[in-house]
Every structure is written in C-alpha cells, then in structure tokens.
Length: 556
Image (tube, rainbow, N blue to C red):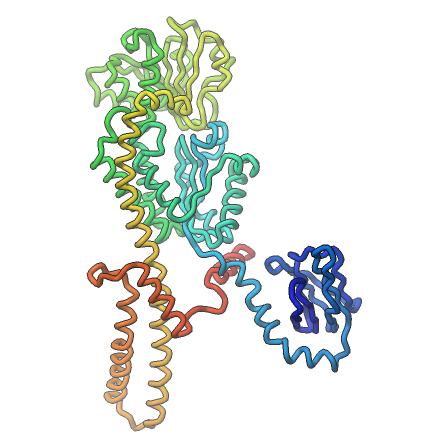
C-alpha cells in the first residue's frame, strides 16, 4: 500500500499495493519515495505517472513548504499501522484512480473545429504543397478519422485554401493530430504549418464555412466556384466513413447558405471567380486594356481553363490558342463559341505556342512546372512585355521567371489587385450577406445542440426497457408454467404500454419541436435533469470510450 500526502493540503491518499501515483504538477525539487528494490514499470495517467511495484508500504511524513514548494516525503509503514489508514482512505483512492483518466476528456466536449490555411494566412508556396488531389479526398477523410481524437472529417482543398473540418473528441489533441497529419502528407514542417494556420471552434467554425460558401472569404467577392467546391465536398464524402451526421449536416447547410446569399443579395455581380479576376488583371496590364492588340494562349482546358476562355470571350477576345493534352475538351468549347477562333495545340507544342504569345494563362492540374526560367529565356521576344497569369495550384510557372526584364508573372495571390478595385461595393454586399449568415448560424447551432439529447433519449428508453423486461420475467416466473401464451402476450403488451405512457412526457420534453414552444436551453436543462434523476450518465465518459476504441483499432 502507498500513502501520499497532497502538496497543498494535509490529506492522505491511499493507493493499492501494486501501484502509486506521483503528481508531476508539483513544484517539488526533491520528492523522495522509499520503496523496496523490486521490479517496476511506468504508465502515464494524465499529468501523473503510475509506478507499479511489488507490495511496499509508504507513508507521507510531511510537506515541506519552504520557498512555496510542496515537497512530498514518504517512509515505509508497518502492515498493522497501514491497515487503519487503508480502511479510512481506500475509497477516495479508488475514486481517484477511476476518475483520473476520465477527467482528461470530461473537461472537454466533442465539437466541430476547422484547422486551415488560406491566402489570408499562408503564401502559395505553402498552400501548393498541402493541396490534395480530388481523387485522394476520400482517402484523406479515412486517414483523418483514423486519428485517435478525430471522429468525423471533411477536406476543402482549393487553390486559395486548405481547410480540414473535424468533429474532435478533444480540441487541442485534435489540432495536434491534424497538424502532424498535414505535415506528413505534404512534407511541410509542423512549425511552418503552425505558423500559418488558423484555428476556429464551434460557432466560429460554422460561421467561417458559411462565409466561405457565400463567397465572402474569397479573393473575389461572391465568386461562384467556391460554392461548387463545397458541393463537391458533399458529393465526395457520401458513403465515406467519417463523413457523418455533424460534418455532413454542416456542409449541406453551407450549400443552402451559399445559395441564399447569392439569391437575396447582388453579391455575384461583376467579377465572381478566380478565372474572371485573372482575365480582368491581364486586361489591366495589356496595352490599351484591350485583347484585340495581343496574342492569347490558354494552357489547360479543364474547369478553370474553360472559365478563363469564357471570360476572355466576354471581354472581347476573338482569337486564342488553347494547349491541352487532348482535343476533345477544346472541340466542345469550340462548338459552344462558334463565333470565336479557338485553335487547339497539343502539349508537345507548348513552347512553340508560348513563343508566339503575349499573354499566357496557365490553369492545369500539373504537379510539375510547365515554364521554368531557363525555358522562358529561350522564347522569342513578345510584342510587349510577356505576361504570365498563373492560376494553378501547384503553380505552373516558376516564380523566378518574373526576374526577367521581358516577362511579368502573376499568381493567385496577385488577384487581390482586382478585388481592391471594387472594395466599397464588396463591403456593402458583405454586410447584407452577414445578416443572412448570422440567422443561418443560429439555426444550424440549434440543430447541432439538439443532437445532444439523442443519447439521453436512447439511454432512458434502454433503462426503462431493462426494468420492464426484468419485472416481466419475475411476473411470469411467479405465475408458473400454466400461463398461456395468450396471457403472456397480454402481460407483455401491458408492460410495454405502461412504459411507453410513462416515457411519453419525458421524451416530448427532450425533442426540439417548434410547435411545443420550448427553447433549446429548456430542452438541454431537461436532458441534464433526466440524466441526474435516472443515473444515466456514465462513470467513464463516452469520449474516453471512443478514444480507447480508436487506439485499440490502430494497434491491431
């Protein structure tokens, strides 16, 4: 048996013979423990260490409070003297052992958070390394949910942001695990990610995603592409373990918010996407601000490339060359815009086409550079200063190309110049949208909070069913074997009916039903009251059980 005194109070804690606890939070510099020289082992429990020994008896002598330090000193006791202390203190010690691990998690509750990097916080050099290809998103969700403290997850990866939304069983542990995972998949050191990342929890995380979906957090106010990307997260997540009720509900509600904001405000007027901003930026830089006077090359005919082509046509561009790996997509675009001369060239002709172009838009999914400084130096001289607009992430144009006197390079971060041109209008529309978002955040948070009553409803019904089944069994046993099946069925239905009638009132007070006129706070109070009255709360938290289960699976 071990007796250890508290460094802050004259109290004793008695532990079983096989272990003792040493408090690591003490400021003690000289904790001394007398023990037998037997084999031992260490195990961490929160901020303590459990030391497993063969039976030895120790007693706390005193607490040295010199210089404000609480130094615990212990000595061995005889077995006869120790029993009296053990009888009076063993209960509290057992409670200590039982709750020490659980307290780590019961102080935190499971909640939604976002760990992210965006153009606001991180340069493109960092973001491009963290970018996750579309095909790898389901695997990313699975890997995130395999982490010990992550229950649900979703990944929003675009050219302007890399954001991971998660339901975490512990906030700070969840952040640590996600950050380490991001470092592992990207090769970016944890310190660099931490320096550029932002963290939002609960209501703030919800509001952030709604603002993102509405286009308020984009380089170009109200751009429609981000809403499509949020929709794609839901599409990819369907059926993937870990994209579950809370995260799925969050993203689906974000889509509703994005649609409502665009419908009820004029936020989508003007430049509404990265591609349109790229075309506007190029127009601001070319002579006479007209595409009639320059030769245009678009590299890539995917989603972004097609949008660039559309906006070029809208700005008056009547002729352009499009380089793509296959001609099919270019032919489809050519069919759509028959009044515009769109010339297809394969990738093998990329450098030749670049030599004959003044403005080059790069918008591919290539993970390698398409234009290095050495390659651009070999290009023939353009009519004016050659302009590269690189809206790809990872970037297609080497940053040092801009060091050449004859060339200018702009990437997605430089599109801020276009945004600033309409700053006043952007702020006015954002204010209108924020009112809508505030309403939607309150609605979503109310729905999310109402989910807290679901476990209580299930536990209360299970508790009542256990009692009903037990009493039913006793009743049938007392009535003997002569009871007919008809009477047994009648007794069963009677017991079920009584239980259902008794549970009807409590269940109604746990459900969010606007027709009943109950507030969410009242429902939550009812939930806590029922947990206390019927003893429904578990001794070890559900969070800890979930974490233990995840850790066991990871060790298999």
